[in-house]
Image (cartoon, rainbow, N blue to C red):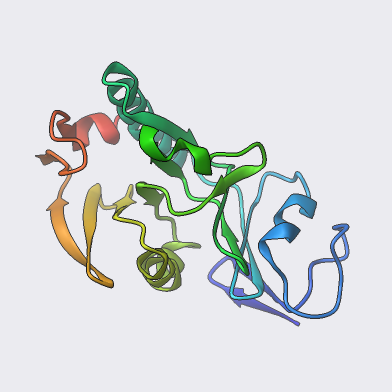
Length: 202
């Protein structure tokens, strides 16, 4: 059975017939490597697969700008590695996601393997769109907190906002909320200044 969530499709308990992974029972992160190379984003959360359509240009511009900013900083100070979608991130055995931008610290680089990232990255960034916003702010936020992702940023290209969250115990607390002209210095990168005008630039 399928259900529409915005323009995202949720397949409960099975993969579409166009894949090699159709089977009975709950899906797991292993099924990510059997999804079609169709330009869509495929994620499996709690045994269900969510398929989001190819993103619009503003979304990709923000992903590229922010990833470029982080990568330059991370490389300059040899802090670790920055990766962008589509890369599989396995946070718990049933679930595998494909965040927009991921940072893994050098001390934890062992979690980066050939097929993807197996473990909680130090930072996950999701750039929201109408088809993914409720999931990014709901079930994915809960998942990231549960598995111990220490920093989670949500960027809304339409509103021009960035909300930086930091894990405090078992839930996230707001570290910064900035608008189109704002900037902030992340606690994870104390020598970096994130300017929203650069993040949102076409």
